[in-house]
Image 1 (tube, rainbow, N blue to C red):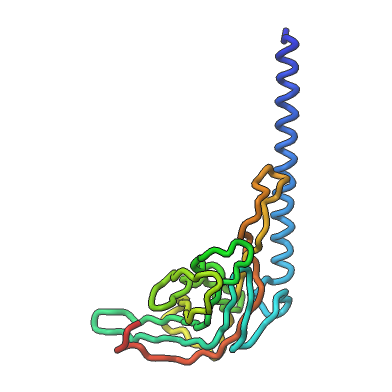
Image 2: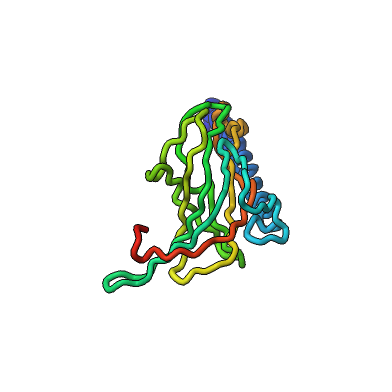
Length: 211
């Protein structure tokens, strides 16, 4: 026969399990709802149902703690050599400014914040970040004038296009959901689409140049 202490411990354990189970059920429900919203709107893969503005370069876009002034795009083609395969990359140029008025800290641009949107239902492609002053992941200091930068996307060797679309994601300065007992202090997180920028790329042969 169980003692009174055993019964009380069992009751406490059962309540803890039910409380955590309720939190996990809420979390799963939120994920499902978010997935359904993305599927219903088409995200930014298709123009039909797109929930963010579509802009044409040259254009300035503010997203999160970054300000971009998009200027031009290039499809840079390197033809096959005697000992090398053909290569092509999509390069997008912009002036980049750190507008982080919340933390006022210096940072480099994460590659996930700029994506190439191929269209046709294809998955978007992350960039490699920002190359400024000839250095990838150059740290942009808050409060200083914009830096001239570019970002690169991997594309197929035979890639061609008269118009490319670049998705701009912005992080939000917010805290974690206290429902899950997480940190209440806000920070930059939860990147979401803010805009799509259209550019008409120029095709450049860099076979003999420095890619």
